Length: 305
Picture 1 (cartoon, rainbow, N blue to C red):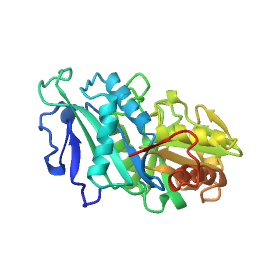
Picture 2: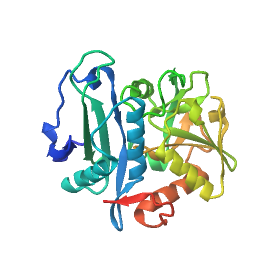
Picture 3: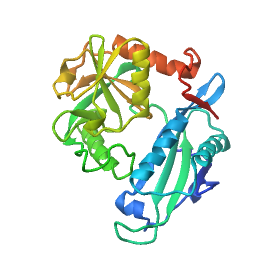
């Protein structure tokens, strides 16, 4: 994160200085990962700052909280207003927002029914996988770590503890000299990146792992699918064997942080020509065009601050 930290965080109902947004070291979430969160981007547009699919993200936050029995006193309208307040108070336009609900201090057992906290932070966060990743593509690898089986942890929930798996995948990839890792499912099919969904393109058909492959229901994933269908491409959500990723014409990743990032090689095997392909570029053009005004917001994805 940049050292130029914003001034305020929305913390349990009010704006507080960044350094004062603290929790007790005996908070349940710190010990057991009992938190749920979102990653959301706002963009500077010709009409002012706009948050991409803001309501959809916040609804997913509540869904994650429901799965993990994390109650919060704040309703959807309150949190939507709070995120806008954080952006405005910190004089941000293009920013990354992080809402978080966590189980706080109280009881010490796994099933302790401790009070929850809620916060929303916002800061400037550039390209997640590197300054040139979106334009040039990245080098990825298949991780030795696999995603958990669907009946082990709820992949649908964007929960703190779930991301320990992602940390293993990401750190292994970087240790081996790659920019990102791709995990397989428990039974050996392609799942997702450490923090991104994946798409494979062969001819004019776009393939992506199904929801049953222990993947997060990515909001940028959904946007990419919608854009691709608008452009006339066929989307197939199905189990994908590992070796397929070496044989297709194009591969790209999607995520709030990663946006739409091409993959130019996997396990040091070149994907296609080794450069972002025409279908990936077409989807990127429609996605990023939403923010510079060159593409009409047909689906109502921009929610203005």
